[in-house]
Amino acid sequence: MIYLDNNATTKPYPEVVEVMTKFMTSRFWNASSAYGQIDGLEEVVETAKAAIRMLIGAAPDDEVVFTSGATESNTWAVAEGARRAMGRGWVLSSQIEHPSISEPLESLQKQGMEVRLVPVTRNGTIDLDKLAGIIDSDLCFASLMFAHNETGVLQPLQEAASLLRERCPQCLIHTDATQAIGKVPVSFKGELCDVDLISFSGHKFHGPKGIGGLIIREGTQIQPLIRGGGQQNNLRSGTLNIPAIVGISVAANKSWEFLQMNLSESICAVRDRFEEQMSSIFPNVNILGSQTQRLPNTSYFGIPEADADDLVYLLATEGIVLSTGSSCSAKSIEPAKTALLMKYSYEEASTLLRFSASYENTADEVDLLVNKLRQVFN
Ligand code: PMP
Image 1 (cartoon, helix red, strand yellow):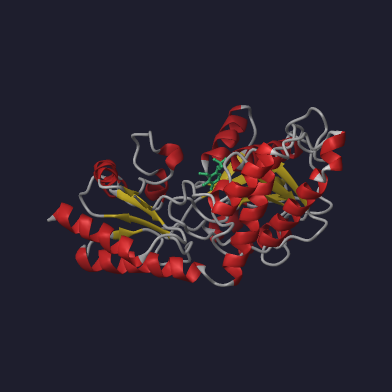
Image 2 (cartoon, helix red, strand yellow):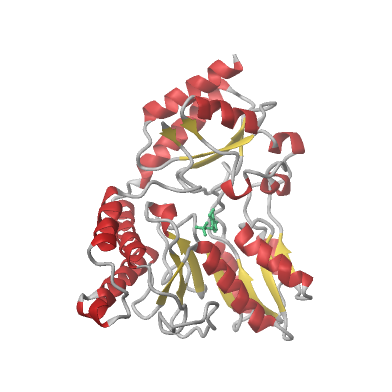
């Protein structure tokens, strides 16, 4: 099988599976229990938090809270934003956020909250001029994604956050960095210094599913979303998922090493080879966001007059796995909403497929895929 749907999920590193198995079989204790403490599980959790901080370029005093994944982290961030805005002001986001941001915001809007959404340009980046035009001092919360799950476009987050911070010093700023973490260097101390909260998910960087987290900048006060036994300093109750925590810890370390060694360049070379070959065989191919900075592994492309759903199915029967965009909306019969927002036509949007590579994909696999597409269209 040629797996090219790594923005949907990635294969866990073998070391992740190995360490998780060990913790599920012989160190399965409850971390809050006496024997869990004797066995050093609290240190295991601290080590995992340190690995996440390193990957995200966070400082030792920034809080890492483990959640069930980015959906929960995003829901939590929006809930905190709503709490702050209630009766005092409004909240801001963009038109292209993942449903785990846009759906809770829509629900808040129905309850009477003012939500303003920044539009997107033809390139798939949020429109900074429009952003500048809609900010005012009543803004209480902003959530803007780091990298888009379908186009892979890296958003001008640093510029956006610095503008927000300048105009609204008290505003809480959140980013959903789920697709960026592990694929490109991220620095909470550096370019994200104006951001207060970051969401992430382990399975997007070769860690386990069902675990992710929220990074909370030191000094940021936030109310828990999930209350109960008071685990994680009362910020997120629930028995700690130690196997997943050790798994995400190993994945974070390996992803950090990978980025340190600039190995994402080889993934980029695989993606670029694909796009070069596609452009020469199909001169009218649309490649969304190719004029701007993107994740090195992602290509969101459309062959004119192809039907994306048919093509995905046909390739799957040949053992080549791609998707028609975000897997969260794969069952929807609507064509890609993001492409329509980028002013592609309904017909063009219906042709779009997402190629998303990992370190395991090779040039030979790209050649096989391109040849298959050539045969189909001949
Ligand atoms: N945000 C983005 C940008 C995503 O791509 C995803 C996963 N598709 C999520 C949030 C949600 O992650 P999870 O399903 O792991 O909760």
